[in-house]
Image: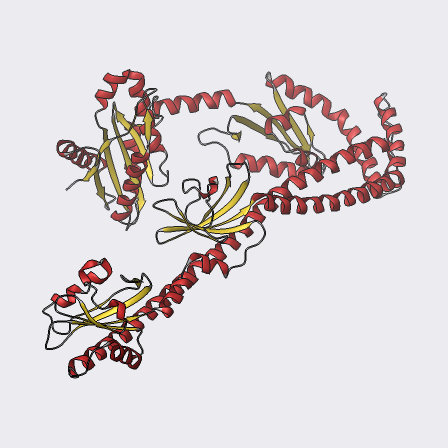
Length: 637
């Protein structure tokens, strides 16, 4: 027996270890995934925060520089307009540029030609010859006093170097004074706002990468490893990536799995990705360590149990077996007396009490079985005794969990409480009938006497299910499973009467558009499929707010209740139409279409209003929308 005990103990503990490992694996997997998601989310949040800060800095730099550049351009124009006797040769223009601390100074005459410049090779350039210079002709042609233009940094026409030009109209004569700058500070600020620069400031772990995808084009516009190669893997495709603030495992074209988290920012999707192999390695390492600890615990437990069983159990069990063997042979006057520990003493007393009870209970049990005439379970317990006498059918009929069986059978108080608790939850309309599972019902009949309690349990599943089936068929439409119109009116009327102050509800009458053409084209099977699909959309709405029914043919109705204001009714009705719009039904192997339905809405906040009046108003609204247009709902006016 000791070997058998250890064998089964080993099997149970081993099974428990693997079960624990399974739960640990699942928990650790979700925990690692959640931690990685939080890490990536925080990193992406920092990237977006940096982008916002750099964007603000760039705007401030550009604004301040524009004001400064405009001031210098006006100063150059002032000098040239007030000191016309000064020659404007190259040396003088260079002097003026140095005086104003600008890189270039140009004077554009009334013909749009650079007449004088601090850069000799620019003299004689026609401003109309290039897109960059042509923009300043608007200042030359403007009649507005003090007209000016601040041009963004771009390659200039002459040398294609990045320059920022500011031009102001001259006073007293037609012409433009233009100053140019190399926008170093602005370019540095723009550089700090690039994805490559920002990614370079965020260290990435092994197997981790950051990248940015243009949502409109699906193009990679930034990557932590640079943009010097093509990124063709599957997890770079915009349609494979998770949406904003979500995560997903995406498989590359070569089979490698990547864990990706994304954040939407303006018109791009910023993503962080990590090789799934790294996550799996962490997971397996954690599970392996746990497995080793559990194996060590199992060895220690088996060693200890082996010692305790040998020293504390085996000897006493052998004595009890000898006594039980004598009882089994018919020696019911045998007294079991085993010492050594309290459990054996209690067991000996229990066996002796049980033997005495068997003699008196056998006749009663036989009578119960004869009275029932059908498969049943029976139980009996006497006052002052802990043991409950039961037939094998009790456990099966009540489906008592295995861990509770001995606990209940050995304690009459707990067993009585268990039975009476079941009876408190009896099925409505059925005396002493309780529901065990979704498909099983039993009746418990108890008879109490001065000595104790006698009970019979019978299976009444077939009777109850037949009543339920008949009730369902009387209240539900057989094709769609929705309520029949008669039952709908009854339930809707109850909902209206139960409305508390401040609540509103709405009645919606619905009619499928062009349903006759569907029946004519695809036959009644197609029409029935169309009706069932529409009904499934109605049934998908939350039951705490929707009561749905089929009125007749292609006409349906629903009630939206439990709302505090009319806007909530409109919200739920809009949600219904949104789900309906997204639902397509395949009517043949090659043809599918969206379900279209017209609806009329009538609502009330008065719990005294008749449901028939609401239904009539909703019908009027439905007829109105059917006359004018289809595919949407309108409200009764």
